[in-house]
Length: 110
Image 1 (cartoon, rainbow, N blue to C red):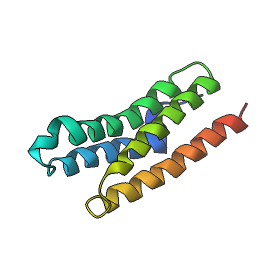
Image 2: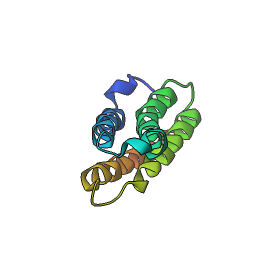
Image 3: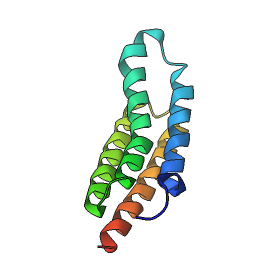
Image 4: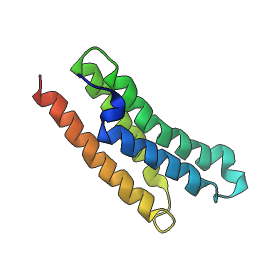
């Protein structure tokens, strides 16, 4: 797996999505700081983190494992209210499709 994780479109979009989740969650009620806000932020940051960690591993199988974990973290973002987060959810869906393609391409190369 040549190149850097920073070259992966999935990682780049994951970082942008995480930044947007942080921005959007600033408007959440203060009493959700340690609940929903914290959970969504951790899930959003986990997506590009897992992509980077997986790309740094020594095998395609390990990379696929971490891509699957990134998909799981991405799914956690779906607990956002639809009308409040339509744009974020749309971007999360796009990133999910990119992760699916990246996972499929790592399987095909085996």
